[in-house]
Image (cartoon, rainbow, N blue to C red; front, side, top):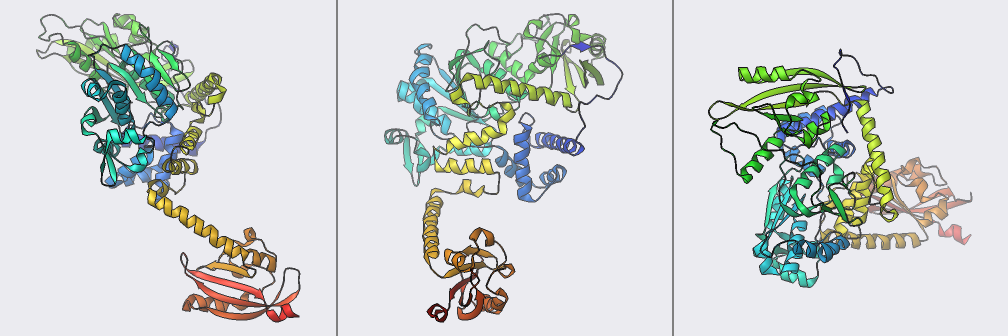
Length: 639
């Protein structure tokens, strides 16, 4: 929502609604500087991602490399090219599978695809975009779905699928079309045999159908969208972006779809405040349809007006669309373009949002718009730039919107044709103000409103429709649902929830998981055996800390296992004088030979004097250690 504009005033400090947190503010500013560095150094723009999620993942990577501050981590990125790859793999989550969320895909195949095909002519091309395709399972699922609906020959002739992602490593895997047998478990044996060929230990997708999928790197927050789509799938990607980035992405998706085209989102995502542009096809499965003849804001601006005789010919429709894409995506800042007569021809989405403009302002004289004279007189500057044929910059222009003060750098750039005649002028506005506390509060309130909206949709979906305020929990809830689909996704969801150093679990293959289960069974069996032994058995690690304390030790000395585990054995205070065992234990650690029994006078858990026979054996487990077996002397038992 645009803010009311007022006359510029003298520079002053903005009032704060509460006491600032200097440490948090400094950390937030350092994070923003790091994100800007990543964007400029590698072209990855993460500034639209939610700061809570992004900060958590970057901090996870910083912890892995032993760095505690953002500036120090930026220094590491500047000196280590490999660290960029590790960081991107930490930030970008590639969780996918064939026909993920079976109910949603069944609805898509049963109801949406037949209606989509009915709207098209028999020879018309079917255009589909899988945005955020990860390692390709979703794109190949689309091929299988259309091949089943049309037949393979008809699918080869008509269907074209664009699959994009920002992760080059994931795209390389997707292009290969090779998957292990575990990845194909969601498919029936009939579909697997029909669309995959065994290639050693893996399965490869059919080469002829594979050629109907075009894989490419694409950033949905910056790059021009693919157009004239019949179906656009972007599942569980929007939830990682903040509200502003989501709005821009939905604008691009709206442009990309033809009228009546379908948009398929993930279960944790919604289209809020877009009822005028999208109608609900199925709310539960998050399938929406672009309205036909809607009056929503278009993504692309009108074409430039060119004076006759300038030597510039009117472009074809395709060339005009390409020019619009390039102009609109030339920079992530608000900008306005005027033709040589001073008529507004382009207003990008940033400018519409920030200055309260709309598509209805395209075609109006620029001098009639409030932005032409407020916050600074731009008309005279445009005339000067046009006359002198040079770019003008006005720095730090103060703009007041209510009680909020922002500062803008304004760049006025005249454009000339091949013959040197002036044909257009662009005006860009760069916000140079650090985000204020008021802006954060507005964002928080909007997220609260989105929460209330989503909760009213359906009480049965409240875990799937968590709002922006609880987005950090959405990842955990979404990955928890993935546990029911495969053991591999269970490891990934555990990694998301615990945020610990267990990432190696995500990369374990099926063989390791089977061995782990066998090891767990063996461990449970050994623990049961250990528990059933009447004598007291204590396992010490190489640092002489208690690692196991069986039931016999509990009955003999009266200490529970949870009271002694991970405690130094020789610091424990119970009826056994442990100091008398130190020579025996150290000798066993050194020689790795069994010794005993050693008779030690002790007090049982009930305070009765006993003679305890102690056997000491080396423990060949992890990092070594010893096993102490303690039992009351047979002579005492006889007495």
